[in-house]
Amino acid sequence: MKLRVINPNTTQAMTDTIGQAARRVAGPGTLIVASQPASGPVSIESHFDEAVAAIGVAEEVLAGEREGTDAYVIACFGDPGLWSARELTRAPVIGIAEAAFHMAALIATRFSVVTTLGRTCVIAEHLLAQYGFEHQCRRVRAAEIPVLDLEHDPDASLRKIIEESLRAKEEDGVGAIVLGCGGMADLTEEISRAVGLPVVEGVTAAVKLAESLVHLGLHTSKHGDLDFPRPKAFAGRFSHFSA
Ligand code: 5HY
Image 1 (cartoon, rainbow, N blue to C red):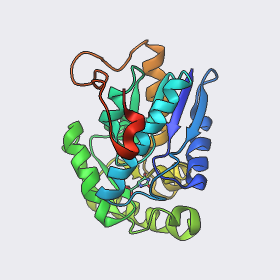
Image 2 (cartoon, helix red, strand yellow):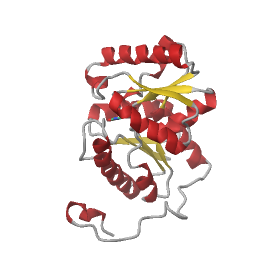
Image 3 (cartoon, rainbow, N blue to C red):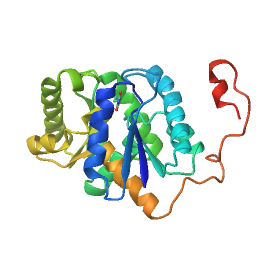
Image 4 (spheres, protein in one colour):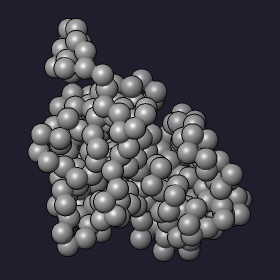
């Protein structure tokens, strides 16, 4: 199967980190195509960044449809453009936040999320409510690191994520930690060893869920709200979406 793992920001180094993590857990018959939009923010740290990134995700899904893709992963913890992406394809589309919440809820009664900047915590809280996991999540915490520090200052970033995860273990009484950024895809084992708790990371969780859906022959339902968008004209720089 061909699995397109889309990094919705436009930082190649982070796309590479995400692609490597996906390939590390992908099954023998799974081809991972790691991609990023041609246009958009270098990192996603606000509602506006998410709004712009959602268009990039849609363009990457349409590109994947031209290349015969069996499933998609949206590798940003805000799951930007998830629902519109599901309209554009029959293939399964998995957001890394949604995947991580599902996996964490299977291994612990309670979990906490450790994400990057404090201002993005509300985005994760909105997703917890939307997906119905607000009861299993004790707290969404921030290591207060800009997303690109994961690439530019990895040692300090790792130290801050471990410190915040240890605080979650001590103060939240949780059984697992969910990492709140696609750029943390390669840090799971090190953090789990340092904190002494299971650590769930969304990119690898989403790859395994996507493979399971494809192996079960399950597709995004085209009955109802996730049916393909009705063909129409788009004006200006969105004219390439016209159908
Ligand atoms: C992510 N931003 O996973 C989110 C993390 C965040 O560029 N990739 C990003 O802080 O919401």
